Length: 353
Image 1: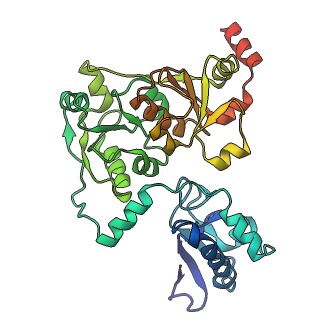
Image 2: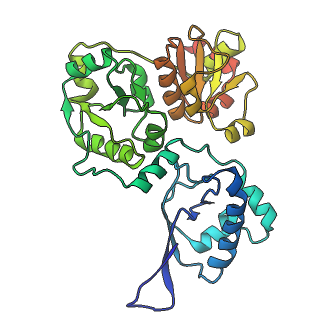
Image 3: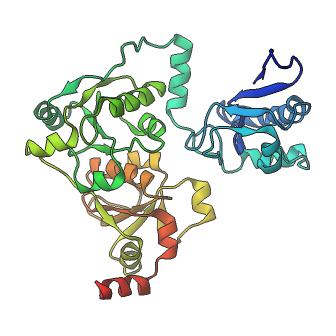
């Protein structure tokens, strides 16, 4: 953590904290990345840091963390990029002054996100020294027909950067649906296969969108990007190349199909999310683990994939499609919609239609 002063105004009153992976908006950094043996001692060190390092700093100082919502570096981070120490003292559950050390440790270790498997890889990259990524890799437009040839030969992995509904409507066969307007870098780094280069595709081949995606992948150690589809999915469709689709079900339809035994429900949220708000009919399998399939779900089974909102379920459903699951669909709206839906509401909607 760095304490920042505005020397022209005061040499004693700090204006900001650069907190890195220590203090986040609404959360703290995770102490478990070095393994089970070290996590409790690191959690105790976090307790001492909270009580000692922050104690004498004023409420008005700004907090500028290294990560925000969507990062796997902590649990329950806010989407706000900046806070104040006073606000965190009032609202951040880990800064509660009444917590004992033992209670703090248990609270900090409970409900942590899964550890992305690119973290150990990045540790090795950082130790050895990173590759030169100037100029950025992947900023090369590729003709749709050339990409199609490489896809047919299984020479590349295509990542589709569009939103879940656009991906569902039509995508490059075998593509992974990892939307750029979400925690893209985390999931692209986590679930993209290592055995072949990546080709990116968006709506129209916008270089700004492609560059954003490339930068995200490079930050997670995924720098083997060959290029992007010139003209995006618009050009792919205009060329008459094959498309695959991913079915989209509203929560009412999915709920009814699951209740009638016509479809299996696969919940790909984190274990903590699943335990807090679960449907006993669901088969739980976190997103990253779907790379090995889902126990109890065969390729010929009809399966509805659900998460919190529809983003992660699209990632997982696209993985399952690559594994040969052809009857997989995405539940639009995620668990919030699932909980709000009922068979009666679905019936009324269909009758009105």
